[in-house]
Amino acid sequence: DQQVKQNSPSLSVQEGRISILNCDYTNSMFDYFLWYKKYPAEGPTFLISISSIKDKNEDGRFTVFLNKSAKHLSLHIVPSQPGDSAVYFCAGEDTGKLIFGQGTTLQVKP
Amino acid sequence: EAGVAQSPRYKIIEKRQSVAFWCNPISGHATLYWYQQILGQGPKLLIQFQNNGVVDDSQLPKDRFSAERLKGVDSTLKIQPAKLEDSAVYLCASSLRGANYGYTFGSGTRLTVV
Image (cartoon, rainbow over all chains, first blue to last red; front, top):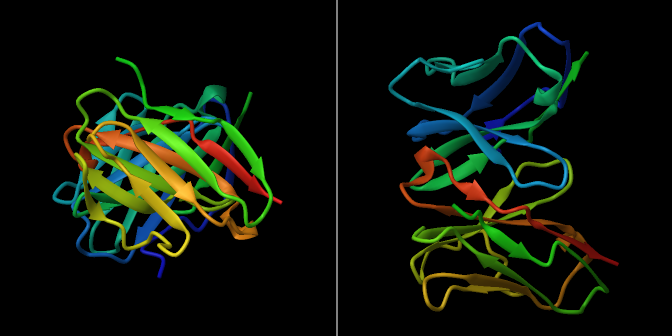
């Protein structure tokens, strides 16, 4: 059973525009949701998180939105930069463990 | 602060051979995780340690995989015997304050079983 799903394997946007990465989940017990970014040959790095009791969290160019009724969250990157090109993973936290989605590869074109 | 150290970075073995991976977490991080990431998929939790005790190993294929964290610091993950489907990146991560604050991952060990 896949508790966290990222249905778009890839996304391509122009530099300066908005990138929107989406994530759906099925586990109602998730307390937190996190986004990680991964460059090739490196481990994932933590980007931003949101508590399940909130609907928005912002950190600089990155904003995460949570819609609990739809069991959906999204990561907005504004403005997108070429250095943002990476694989982005969505994860839900349940009893101290992170459960990851499959990832979305973002390409930001100059 | 130093990051999570993993070794080796790459390993190629033949099926049915054994292999071991090593992880040294960030100093003071009580919780340590091993994840398996197969190409094109997200990381999948294999085992979680709290200090030197196992918290969750429900996803660890115990017939061939084993892990230990004897002194509550560094950890080893072993596969014996390896199968072709074990080809993946093995990621170690550690956490100080709990998963909701994000954990720090190492760069991983890329295992190829031929």
